[in-house]
Length: 399
Image (cartoon, rainbow, N blue to C red):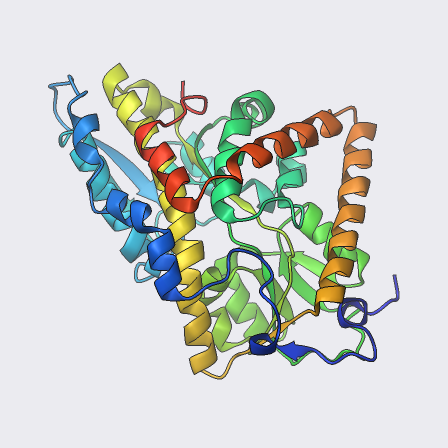
């Protein structure tokens, strides 16, 4: 397609507007203060205020069991400081000191791409297993439909819906890859962080943009860009060296991985969101006594909600403030072009569903179920979804 990506978005006669002059794109905007109120229950959970009722259920009286947790996040990242470390303490309290976590950061135990092998050969017990990086290779075909633009109103709803889809639609895919799912967590909406200022008259055909595999890559390819599948920790260096011209990524993650220092222009739109799965070693899980399995499942369900709300919501707002303070420029689409963007997303969905149906996969039935669940959970606030996850966790993910 030779039509300019940016011309499609903003029109040849319409300049990109500074973010301050445009309307909010979704209910995931807001200030840090607004997000603190919106995620107050998540913070209560991270502070341990929901731990005691779960601790009362523990009957195991053997020695503590340590779970090796490996991640690619920098050790000083806000998600580590504000979510992971407090959450590990919550697990200790929920289990009365019987489940402990030994974390490894910055890919020191293994690379992000090597997580699948690390689980299989016993180097870790829980780690990232992002289906979006290897969707075709590992057979995660239906799962990529969750990345469609405009499908969910926010990340909290997307996380709640995704986890409830797992047992019926995704379990066999993960089992075939030799792992168990630990948690499914949806990101906020991806923005397009660019090295150079976008010009409405310019054509970006041929530019290399890091993205997730599947629907997001298909969308970028359709409008002329060259999507590059690259783990987030490698993107900053690739942009600095000129091998990439941009990346589709969330605000919070762009800051964590130093991308905001290299990409000084952020075009805000709905490039969809990505599910970031963490998997667990079946051998580790099966050695746990039944009561600790229950505790671990309850912790994971709440941790998924707390992380998506605090990191992509509250920390996303903080990242936007920091970006502006260092000279980053945010650009948004007009209302008319946002509607045009949605139509493009509708076309992407139609094409993806038709392609998967052609592969004998029940994509239409899957999308009906996604929309049914979304209608249910979109009525709940972030705080309501968090309280539900903390007090009434579903048990469909871990048997």
